[in-house]
Length: 170
Length: 170
DNA sequence: AGTTTATGTCAGTCTTGTTGACATTCCAAT
DNA sequence: ATTGGAATGTCAACAAGACTGACATAAACT
Image (tube, rainbow over all chains, first blue to last red; front, side, top):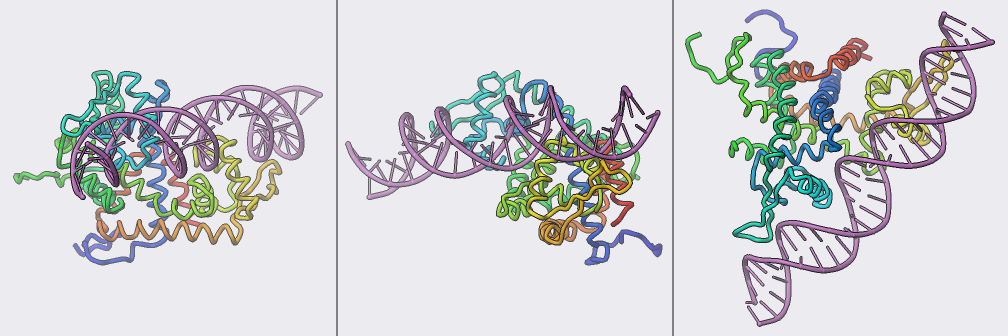
């Protein structure tokens, strides 16, 4: 415990390592990593004439089946017009089903069809494979740190949405 | 070695923690965190009628002053037409200077003007402030893990570009 | 001299975001 | 029962930022 370390191991208030250079490297790492993060699904989507917006909609509908358009809007952070365009194509292509709400008939509840689930699985498999490889390469402790920093980097309201998704499980 | 832990502390091949649920949560955390990551600069850029593409160009020109268009192209991963549109406006607005190369006159070397440096600083300050806050909240060990996972998530060729930027320091 | 490289530019397309306006449906409160 | 507001959908127009393809120019390499 008496060795000198580049990154102090104690969890205190030491700010010495927070140089501009360290922060800039973090920013760049984030930029490059996000590109890698989306690269595999992007390739699959390109073949189907879909984009990232379709992937995001499919992902969160799978995550929270029966969610309303408004819920999805809040999570994705786009306008209803923008989301609607994407949903319309997904519904037309038979990947998403929109059911009128039973308690509140104004609401539309969104579900993936079997075809939708199949595409979700395909996209998710690719993205999880990279994630799994990265986690494996970095090791369990690094993963815990990764998640901790990401959560701290979110906007406060998104931390709420994220926590909700972790609770519900489904 | 006999205690049960949620996240094993040994760095071996233990895959038990890599459940689909864990991976999906990582994917979502990445999505939400990236939104937070870009939110502050986006607000500043919106006032100036610039976008993320301008920010990226400014960032990397600041990072590697005198870099060529081709270098920038490779780092940003866009087409020359796309980059050229952004560079043209930045040059027209007096934020970037393009100098003909001395050894190879085909090349254009890119530099930030004083105005360009000022905007870079403004954007960078905002982004670094959030980064610093996240780092502080998560702690030094988490930061090391964060960086480790991000690097493992990059495409191989981008890992090279990223390493280069770390070397040069500049 | 001929080819390749680096850059710039024009034209057109696509995705995904934006605003604004308007219709419909339905719940809820007066 | 009517009115007000909320949730949703849709149409139109527009902009950023990515793409492809084609072409021009200048410089460097062979």
